[in-house]
Image 1 (cartoon, rainbow, N blue to C red):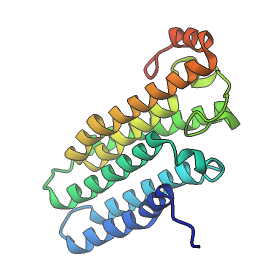
Image 2: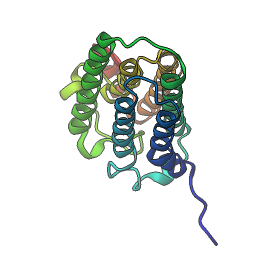
Image 3: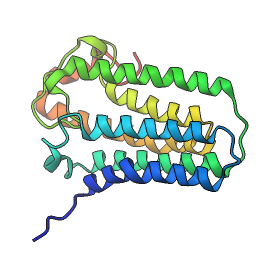
Length: 214
């Protein structure tokens, strides 16, 4: 019997193939849009980076059976993908004014987000997962000295910066009100799990630093 394709693997295929195909098709249909091919390259770069970090980090295949039961992980991936489609269609269909300041400002935030995520992952080492899956080590080293969830904060900043660089207003609003809210909910639920695992030890840690901003 043929094995059923999981939702996460299907979503991975959408990010890998459908997003690049869609953005190229939009450019071909709307050749008059300025900086169109530059935007195409930008979208493909973000899609490749996000696919690699999420699905090819060496942890996805190892824990896919558990991640498929984690609705917050699937929701975050789906909402991020939805934001990407909103951004692409808005870029080609909604008139905008190119603003160099947004590109520079958004690019700076993107680099900060990337730095935070990489710093957080490096600090946790093998303890890092996309969800609390095991009895992970509580650490106050690296970025965790200043905030409890630097990786998640980096993901939120990335979502905001990606739409900001593109100058897509509606995608930016979607990132703020939908994606960021979902990430905050994911953080809240996982902290409840951490408190169940570590009890007062984790409660004390929450008193020492903020969830996101120091």
